[in-house]
Length: 99
Image (tube, rainbow, N blue to C red; front, top):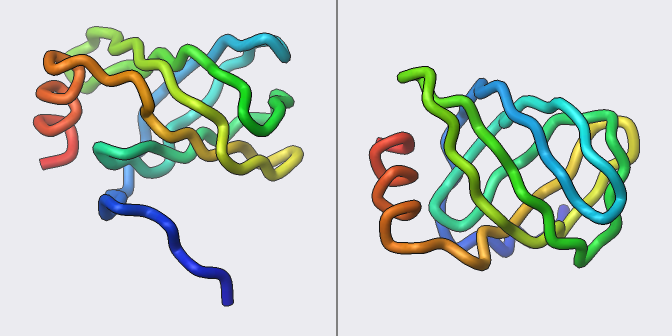
């Protein structure tokens, strides 16, 4: 069993998303999310350590753009992102989304 390094508990989600990085861009789904990061379900390829922009469609219909670092990658399944660059406003929106 691998050690879970997450500081924040992730909650299940099913949000339409799209991402863009140096490796490319693709449509995706956010499977789980926390204040610290999320899992991006996508067939697109990324590199560990890559910085990606992630657009998530909120239940209100608005899009939330966040940036983060790819910390795990499972080819054909998706990747984990840590939100390293949250502003205060982005953190507030995430808190509302999670709770």
